[in-house]
Image 1 (cartoon, rainbow, N blue to C red):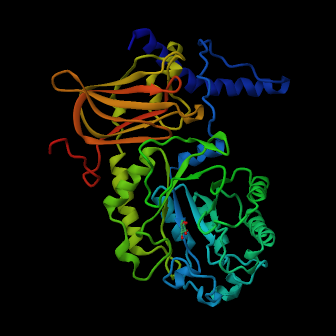
Image 2: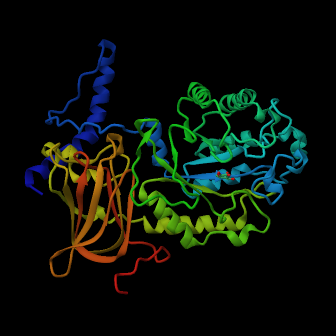
Image 3: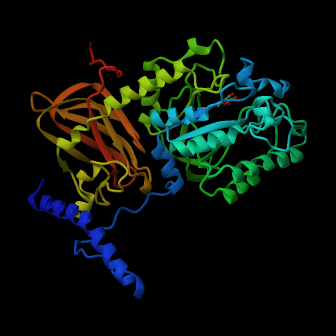
Length: 488
Ligand code: FUL
């Protein structure tokens, strides 16, 4: 990298570390006279790239940053070894013996889930909090003498564990007699929504399942209006405007994943969530379901095909009849987490010397080194007229790696259409070792083990000048998935 740019970078980093303190002091002094002075630095101001619309809302960015959530299917089905009871099971059958939502939330937190979604009412219609709008709810269950409230227990536990709370509310209802009268059912559904949005603190995500809804007319607009009125930060998923279903229940995002989608004739930021149960095709607990538990490798594959392709993973772990997450599932989750922790523990880019084909305005603010840390609002960007380019990492001594993580600065829109990874091989020639299409929030390249002193991340095609928020290079845990070299 050229000497002056390097000098500028050192100056820039010192300035942004020291300046906020100085600016804060100045702002404090000046605030009594009006607006604070505009900073203390005399660096050339280079404006950031224009956003490529549509861009995510602040709430959607926060959602992307969670990367994973835990789905908990719990309800009357839990007690009948059935996925879809038909609304005729007696409320007396709902009776967890040692309801322990803190265990659910703590495990979710421990395995890196940023939020938890509880099925408050599944297709059977049984409601997990003591509403007065139906008798088919926990009030008529022997659990805690009909005084219990699953929603409160779970929402409080999430808050205590430090993760967000959201709920699933099935529009399709096989119990409710008013279901046959669309207008009357809308009123019922809205009154449940109202209670849930009022009584349980901040709601992160509202999940409307599309199953069983065909042919029924719902007043979606008013459902959405109520949610946005009561909880403006809540995101509405699946049958809703903020988060889309990835299209399968296997935790797999497609290889090319665009967040921008056409919805009702308009282009919008509509990111994908991958929901999948940890026990094959079982969303609810079944007494003999342990044999369906996904293997460690299956879970790792799911991670790389969802989070690793820029989607958010919503992994379902179903509490059992005691009201705990089953021990076997917890053990698997912890194993999975520890492999991922081990894989992504040491980011080798910290030892690299950085270079780029182009730096926006030649400003240190947009230098490739800005990709060292994630989610810090600093990123590499090129000049507006550049649609291709590269970041090159050089190491003093050869490194061994088999994972490469890339992130776009999605706050400015999703831009990159194609990219590739190159290394300098033993003969000193550039060799392409991986290529892919979109990046979006995150892209993880799982590649055969490589040894090199130079890596190049090449942007081959972009809708506008590209940005990169983060670059991570890792050598995976011996227990993580291995990609064999061609011909082996
Ligand atoms: C599906 C439902 O029918 C399943 O029971 C489960 O709730 C899953 C998340 O969505 O559509």
